[in-house]
Image (cartoon, rainbow, N blue to C red; front, side, top):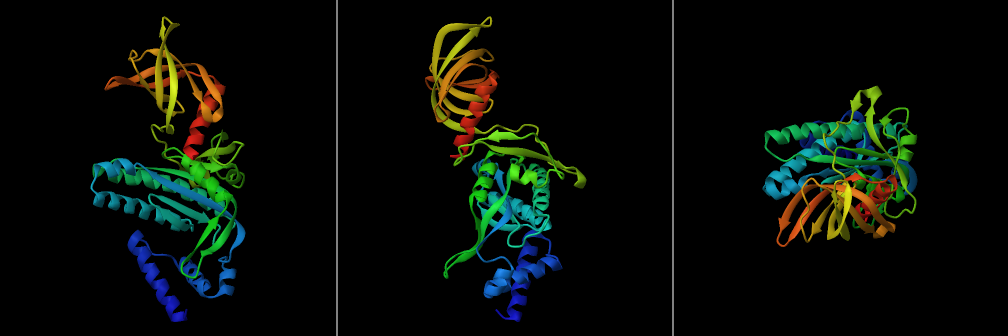
Length: 360
């Protein structure tokens, strides 16, 4: 590439970014872009800019838009695409503000790197600032959705810090700069476990920023590919920057499809009735389940449950739930049950079961 071509490429990319985001890149970002373009041609330049394949510590932010399935089912394709592009453009602005690198868009998800191809001392700090401001941006976008009578869209975010292999992968026909490794896989698992409006961070990320952020107590979760639980925290706020993750009025637990036989017994005057109602669990979450029954239960009544959780080799017993919804489907009844009494051990096993299916 000649100098004139570099200048033209930077100008064209600058115009593209400004057109999509409404905001031009600053001088420092333009210079960084020019260095990257130069490194693509010059192997020595590539090495200097970190484009050779080599291990390096990176903070990975994965964000997934939740709610586009409902949007796609109720709106024309043109409306869905316009809404998706608006969300991704706004999120991209936040990424550029905190000097992150967009690694890729994956449908309605976005993967962002801090520490590659350029590493800075405050990579972790900027990643978390970016995550919080992304959630704030989504609240603003949802206000726009309300004025257009569109369903709300939420964002789940997972952040992890670790060593990856970073560089240009591919062939002479096609190649791209990206990162691979277990730290990327874990970031993906963490994002999958995040609820709507939530930012979950790994212990390795928290250890590098504990003086900066306000976060929840550690929670132990099970993810695919690991035999031991992983410690995660929910990011609440960054007090020194007066940034706080907007709280959602109601965050749904993960609910996963499951076909599990279930035994139900009615309660009468706080005593378990001997008669057993056979059912099949249709889906299960942290706080309850949906069960198909051959006979109805009394709405708002309390029942005793028994069922097996095969993935974690555990039998759920002496668990009580309330019938919160009930409807008839053909010859069967479908009841929505909310746990009312469950031991700490049993709750942990239910959550482990759900987490393993989410990560499957």
